[in-house]
Amino acid sequence: MFQNIPTRTFHAMAKPSGSDCNLNCAYCFYLEKHALYNHTPQPRMADAMLERYVHDYIASVAPEAEVAFTWQGGEPTLLGLEFYRRAVALQAKYGAGRQISNSFQTNGVLLNDAWCEFFVRHHFLIGLSLDGPEEIHNEYRLTKGGRPTHKLVMRALALLQQHGVEYNVLACVNRRSARSAEKIYDFLVTSGVEFIQFIPVVERLADESAQQSGLTLHAPGDACGTLTDWSVIPEDYGRFLCAVFDRWITRDVGKVFVMNIEWAFANFVGAPGTVCHHQPTCGRSVVVEHNGDVYACDHYVYPQFHLGNLNEQTFAAMLDSPQQEAFGKDKYTTLPEQCRQCPVLRACWGGCPKHRFVLTKEGKPGLNYLCAGFRAYFQHLPPYLKAMADLMAMGRPASDIMHAHLHYARSDT
Image 1 (cartoon, rainbow, N blue to C red):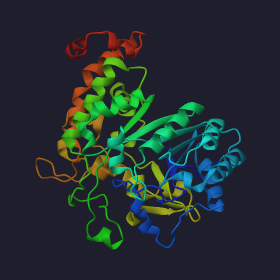
Image 2: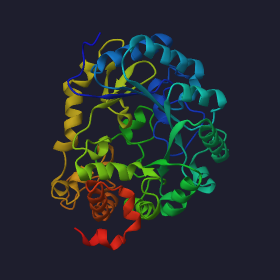
Image 3: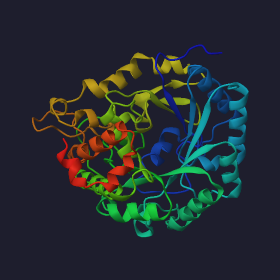
């Protein structure tokens, strides 16, 4: 059974409903992927493909490693609860004795007691999309009829909390919300959220080649394209992250876990990286579309980054293909000299290649659009990260930093 295992560990993210969603969030980069499957007005993963995916994914992960299933979209609840009951039954069938986990990213609109009971029974980790207070969330996260969704998402959050579902919140940071860091953070914490991830919204309008494919947003690549109105300003994003960190470091260490801070701390102490965009290379997190098509990355679902189909190829053949190997290595090999000489290189590693469409000071391509923000953020953290690492080395909790004078952390460098 355990044949055709890729040479290095990898992760697959399934999109069983493709780009189909019950919302119409203005900044969503995935909604338009329906243009790639315009012959399928309502994409759904068929039972045969579900079984193939579950079997092949389990068989492609080393026997001693965890098999981490991630269900996303579009909106994955559109397939209904029975689809996921079949999925966990297939996981039990093909993964006997294996360590298997499931995570599930949702807008929360369709969640009810039955969903939550299922999540608890099968230990699903739920990611809930919530951008902050009502006026911030409702600016871009609307139904297809243009109606606000904040109350629906807060209802979903309450359900998850009432049932004891393990969850985190994913909050997108756009051009306007980037100026409300404290307001957003305080709202989430006051709402009982303990695990938070902030995602910058950066998109460009499509060039002619992308438009020919029916797409409205620019594919990753060269330094051209007009930014969308909702794309975050780099300096504002840096200030946003710094403001969140300053709020967290004074009162919430050990109680609230902000993934953007967790990633930075892991890099600082040399722990294994958990997020691809702040690692030297990438290419080990692929997307599986509803029909079995496999793409290089969630942000690279474009024809030129199509690796194959599960009906025709193994995960090993696609992950270890020259195309995907080059894709992953290019994250490092294409770093411009400005990045290589940067004092925060080992915290940043150039960020996601999707956002590397800006020219350096020398006019060279490949600089991350968010460079100014990343640099400000990663230069802000080290004194505090060092203080926390020192506390932990002494057998004390990192949260003790909240009881110390913060200027100590700045001076002990």
